[in-house]
Amino acid sequence: MTVNKVADSDRSTLDRRTQILITVLGAAAFVAVLDGTAVTASLGTLTTSFDSTLPVVVWVTTGYLLAAASVLPLVGWAVDRFGGRAVFVAGLIAFVSGSVLTGFAWSVSTLILFRVLQGFGGGLVEPAAIAVAAAVAPREHVGRVMGRFSLIINIAPVVGPLVGALLADNGLWRAIFLINLPLGVLIVLAALRWVPATRTLDKPPAPDFIGMGLLSPGFVFLLLMINRWGAGADVALVVVLAVIGVLLLTAYTVHALRTAKTPVLDLRLLRIRAFAAALLAMCAVGFIMFSQLSVLPMLAEEVFGLHGIGRGIITSALGVGLLISMVNAGRLSDKVGPRPLVVTGSLVTAVGLGTVSLVWEALPLAALLALYVVIGLGFGSVAAPSFASVYRTLAPESAAQGTTALFIVVQLFASIGVTVMGLLLDRGGADIYGTVFLVLAATALVAALVGTRLPGRP
Image 1 (cartoon, rainbow, N blue to C red):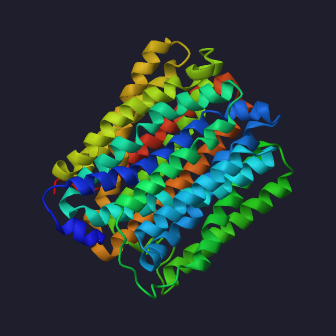
Image 2: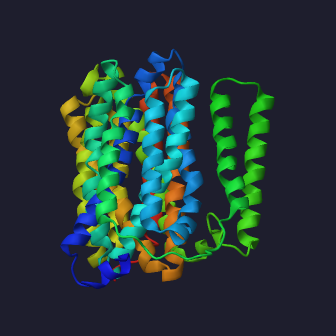
């Protein structure tokens, strides 16, 4: 049974088998997000456990994100060549294997290395799941499918920070990774039962290996430049890293505009105004989301004196808002279009973060938690509609490339956010929080501005 046959069985509603299939696919993405939020909430504890510094330990997250971004261009080719189920299962097995290795890391270097290996698998899981689900869903119900994914996935930002903080503060940080083994095995078995094998092409177009060799390494050098500059490294080294990064990204731009192949990140799609807006909105989503995942546990500990499970409580308040809004935003985008949701959600996020930047020292914890639920409600109305708009603004033959591009920029700008926040928190002290939240509020305003370029009512 193929994915297309499942989809053809009922074009107006999602049948029971399709709902189960989407649940299985979403569960895998849930495990990956749970792992990421739990790890990010534990960065302070990992810094102490390995007697390291925060700018070094943030590479546990940055390395994962960059590794995930680097394999994303392979997803389309691999799905065409081997089928969506095969790529999904292979990515999940690689993710679980990397998790087990990370759980047994004996130094900060091996911790980062194994997280990179884990990221290679994690980078395949969610886009492969989306590719299969998009083939299953009728085009007019893409928002509904994204909403169902959101319902499953966005439980993770509520639970992940609490689990991560609780385990890390009780000396059980290894369990954050090792728990992925039993969960992963169950999902693999369910996928083999419910996810249909898809048709494959014998000779799909080869991936853009040249582009892969330029784009992600270019970002790596720029992030290393930020990291070394923050650590007070020699100016010459900082300049060399910056120059190499800029040259690589410039070379990628030239390559992407000239190549006859489909490039890793097809810059030519930016000529389509609505897609360019969606791409920029998702850049902001990646930066804001992972910056907050890094900052909020530190804020809870340093400002409110919270420890253990308490360190994850502010992040979980954000997750509650996300859980509510992302489910409904995906469904509403089918009716009203992404523009009003993204603009309104971004403005709510900007006002909320701006308020935090001004009064974070004076706010009682209960007021901050309530405010962060509101921020989550606004922020959750940005990602799902922006993502779903790709399937309305691009031709069907370009939709897969557009989806890959959105995943890539989210991962890359998330890695920038984590790196920058690690640097600021390490060097700025408690007074830096006002600046941090002001930067995030400004980024949300940018998302509101570009959101005006998204499509309106269908």
